[in-house]
Image (cartoon, rainbow, N blue to C red):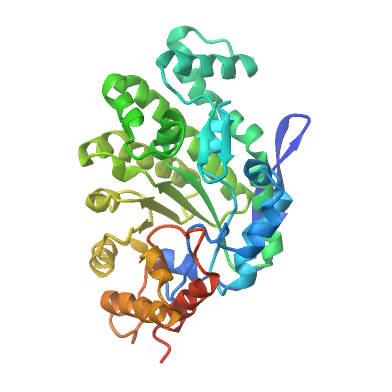
Length: 397
């Protein structure tokens, strides 16, 4: 199978042919396309991370974003859960906040606090300054009325020059996987990235991001449109580098009212999938809109192949509804259930699958098993192994 890969030389982006090892386990890709599977595919969000002792040991003396920017290190971390568990996909080790870093915003990963922006977005003037700096650095002269359009035109260049390390990590990881499982690429939704850019760090109230929507709705749309274009080009670059499936994380979709989400998040989720699918119509795409249980009717009408569900949603009903539209679902085991004793984890996993799909006499199509959110730092890896093995055992006896 040949893909195209970005490499950097003298500040320019070049594309070269790349031949990857033959894929041995394509269950997750077949599930996304509604094709027969021989076991339910399963992977978990944040499967490479702080709950793994090997991750903590490897990163103990390393800065988080420096690790993301090192293709060799990112590849090694991506492979850690694949070496430990019988997973059906790897997901590249990176972070959704590499996009605002590309805009020149400084983001630090502070221990026990999470991502922190040294200068969060607080005013329109600040946004205009970001735009001007990027255009000037790229040698683009634009009149005031043409700045927004010029920024959209600049998106491919910004992404390809600033995020080449992600593309290099993806290509390296495809080779190191040796065809064991497919590799997932990902990005944050424009709204979720905007939340971090304006809040500056983790928040309980989410007042700053929503304040923008009411005080500067037009500029908010401009920023979200810019982020959508950057994200689409970023995801397309990941496919060219070797990603075989993509997920867009709208992790903060639920902090808005349904009306606001339909106005300030959904249009940009749609913009991304339409741009990517126009260029790569066969790439499976997943959308995870956390706490947006009321958004399934809208999401099933988009080009996303799979909608990932959080634990608040009914897995069986959602699966039936999506399959009627030739789409599927992912999820949605409650991550906190992994704190139960291992025997109980197995029982709860089997119960979830039986309630949704019956006794397992036939395996569900268009279904990818996952958690309803990501792994927590204090989760026991052995409990995750029980979950994975129980999913694979479903329908085997």
